[in-house]
Image (cartoon, rainbow, N blue to C red; front, side, top):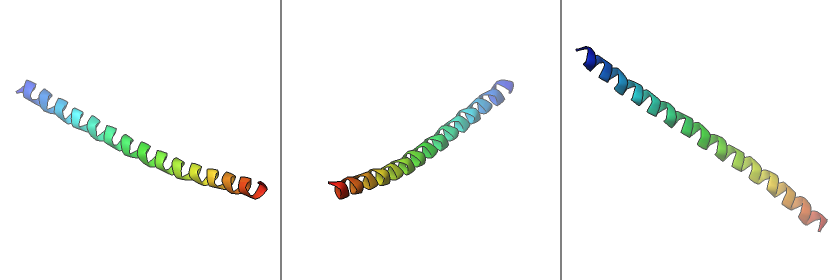
Length: 54
């Protein structure tokens, strides 16, 4: 009986770690996408400035 409870808790812990890893992955993807969009805007501004000068 005790071993069965320990196995159930280990399974629950593994699922919790999996959910936590998935959440962290989503946060990283959102952050990288936002940074990429902002960086694209910076490069567009640089390109416009260079086109004006040249």
